[in-house]
Length: 210
Image 1 (cartoon, one colour):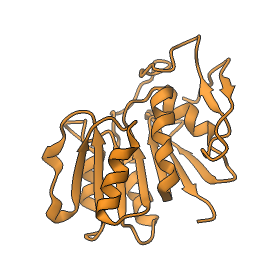
Image 2: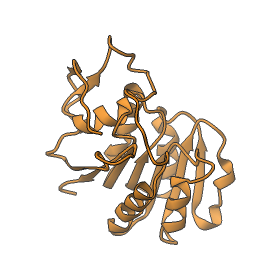
Image 3: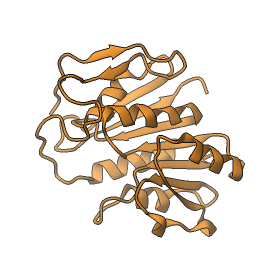
């Protein structure tokens, strides 16, 4: 299952980005490309392994106050969104961000919110956090557009993370795979899961020196 990409270009990254470099796959493929890099056989798009790992990471984070998910409730049969909502503490706020209307999940009484918009606009979440009196993200789950360009943009939310960032699709999709590899190990502890399984894969990074 483990494969590598040849001829990755590594551009300088901003010093405070948490990345060692900015990955580029052009001119082989477009940095805006959101498809798998190679054929991959999986048990399911979202496996029990994936769900259990995400819940396990959530449970390891103390004092959970805010969960942010980019890419919301997209699988009709099995949903990371449902797993996060069903397993968050009662006092914890969940907010999902998606370009499509997923407002069906919203339930303010239970601390469940939805922002419809482009996750590239960080001001949307920043305004929400300010209104809610929240300063930090405890769990950031990235499962939106999987292009290199977009995952680099979504990674910027990590500046507010004091717990963990979880990536789905680190086995074959260009953005999660390459951005995960570019993350600075001096700032984050990195773990990859299910690389040898029939699975799209997950990557988890934990903030160091909080």
